[in-house]
Image 1 (cartoon, rainbow, N blue to C red):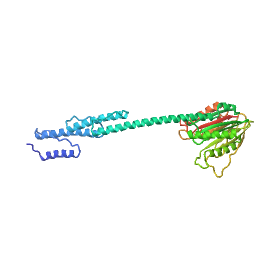
Image 2 (cartoon, rainbow, N blue to C red):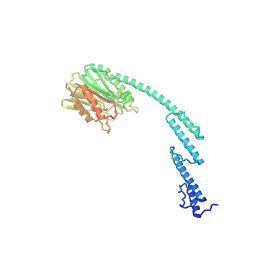
Image 3 (cartoon, helix red, strand yellow):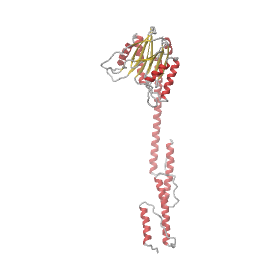
Length: 394
C-alpha cells in the first residue's frame, strides 16, 4: 500500500491547488537517488499530466485569442479532441467568411448546430442587402446619367446664348480674346455683347454661385441685358445696370421673397469714335492698360439684385479716354480668388501685374500666358469658381 510523507502530500496538494486557481504549477521533482516505488510512479503520472495540461492550456489560450493557426498538442484527452474539432470548424468558418467577404453569398455552414442557423440567416440577409444596394446603386447611376445628360443639354443652351465668334467678329470690337473656364458643366459666369448702331456694348457677368444655380441666373441675366439694350435701346451703362438691378429683383421676387441672389458686372460701352469708353461696374472693375501702365477703374460697391439698402445710390459712369493699342480687361473674380495648395489666393495685385506685363503681347499669347500663370499658381489645386476674362485691344 502507498504511504506518503507529509511533505510529499503537501507537494501534490499544492499542485492541484494551483491548477484550480488557473496557474501553471511546476512539475514534482525527485532526488536523484529516489528508489523506484509507487510514489515515483505517481510523480511520473502527475508530471505527465502537468505537461499535457500545460500544452492544452497554451492551446486554449491561443484559441481564445483567435490564433487559429496554433498547432494543437498531440495528447489524447477527450476534451482536447473536442477543442481540436472546434479549431477545425473555426478555420473552415473563417474560410467561408472570406468567401462571403469576396462577394460569394452562396456559402453556407451546416456543421455547427444553432450557430449554423444564425450564420446562414446572416449570410442570406447580407445577400439580400447587397442585392438591394446594387439595385439602388444602379438606379442612382441611371438618375445621375439622366441628370448629367440634362445638364450637358443645358450647357449647349447656355453656350448658344453666349456671343458666337461670328457675332464677335461682326461687332466693331477689334482684336479680343475670351478666357472662359466654367467650374462645372454649366457656368455662373457669362460674357455678353451687343452692337447698337456704331457703338459696341460688352460685359462680363459673375452670377451668385456656380453650376446649375449660377447657370439659371446667368440665363436670366443674358435675356434681361438683351431686352434692355437691344430691344429698349438703353445704351448708357449706368442706366443699363439700374434697369438690370430692378429687373433681376423683380424676376426673383426679391422685394418680398428670401432670394438674395445677384450678379457682379463689368460693363463697357465702346463709342463709335473709338477714342472713349464709358464704364459702369457692379462690384467689378475695368482694367485699362496703356504704355504708361495699368489703371484700375473700380465699379460701384454694390451688386445687381439682392437686398436693397435704405441709403441706395444709383450706379455711376466713368468715362475713359483710350487710344489705339490700349488694352481693356473685364473679368469675374474667379481668377483672383483661386487659391493655391497653401490657400493663398492668386490675388488682385498679382492679376494687375500679370495684365500690365502681358498687355503688349498678341492676344492669343496673352490668353495662353494667363492660363500658364493660373496653372503655375494652382499647382494642381482644384479650380474653386468659374473663371471668365475678356481682353480687348482698342
